[in-house]
Image 1 (cartoon, one colour):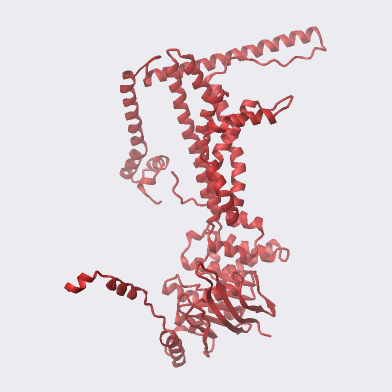
Image 2 (cartoon, rainbow over the protein chains, first blue to last red):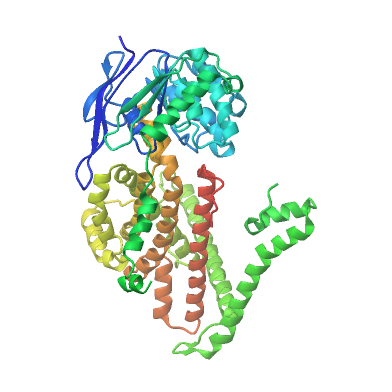
Length: 283
Length: 334
């Protein structure tokens, strides 16, 4: 049985101008322990796919099955790592994770076990040293680590990551990618990650799902990344297979489904067209 | 230690000064924090002293700072005298009871209360108790109600027109209604509170409710989307959601509301006491106005200044409370 099955998922959002179809029949089968990236231009509905899997949005047609059961509400079996960390600023790093752990393991773990579990997860993301800090006292990369720890601590069946490293600088991002690969090798979680970054997608994923542009976005192509693990970014840089994978993704994004950012140009053209006719005559 | 000159409080700079840190910068900060306010106050007193004698009223010249200061002393002396009389009275009662008890062992002493004049200080106490009671009642209603309204967009839309309609109503408009309703509903043989106290309290409540209610609702409604999603993913119970996610985020807004409410409560109370002749500072001002002696204007000025000082202190204590309670210690509070 497929672990996670997106079956012809479509979604429409009501707008004042009538319904807007964001996704059209997105179908995807993901195996246990697989690392899948969703890549596509901004606004193509990647986040919407993730939110539907998370249960935060409801598909208008089709549906999502997790271990054969339909997903129709959010729940801790699908841990979400949000783009901008979304830690509660009034809780310490420890308390932020604790909020999740208490909720998920209420009655299943004793207080001491919970404590140990929280510490274990924070150490997994190398944040054991900052447990009593507040989110505003740590860097963006550290916040994102805590966000990952919080999601992992729920022991989710699927880890959903919405551009988890998008807001970070390149070096911090590389560190976190390495950490994430380590964790994935250790725990063998099923992961769906949204990204804009082609290198990140090739480096981390078993499969890269490339999405067409919206409206009515859907799965364009799926690329199998057959690079053995563990992967090292420095060595991969010269690997011809890596280069080829990169190229395939780039070709999809910038040739087959190039997004024409026509808005600024058209505005300029409009302005010219609206220029007073006399000016044109004299000029 | 982080040094940001304008935000340095005088206590902090004093502390650093005694440790001998950065003397020049600290002196500047100290001057800014203490000297400038003193200069402002001195300028105010000067203008007051210069203009007051130019105004002639039917009760004589408008009092300057010196006359007002003298009257403040008088009011305090009157209070001390009244206290002495009360002490004397109770002593006499006790002696009498002891004598009666010696003659007749079965004698049960009667409770006697001293019924002296209510002094200025008594009125201040009454007003403070009333404003705090009214403010607490208002907060106890407004904060939970604001949370419930803020959590639901529909409820917010439904409640908003009612709130906007009731918010601008003057205390003077509520007063007759509150008086009649309290008289009609509060009928007991041995009242725990006097009727006038309740009328004042409820008038204050009705007027000071709104800023807290609105600010709480807005603060709750502005909970970050991401945190709401976290809460949904975790399937937090309603109570945990409110306690751990919504309420802490709304605390700064709630305190903004509470400070506005307390300010309004204090202003409303003085007006209400004046109009309804309920005991308190407002009544004191009105009585002095009716009294019309040569000292009246000075005595009213004392009351006016005390009203201002209490309002200021109430606001500062709310600020202090916010500093203690709020998680956001970095917020600049002023």
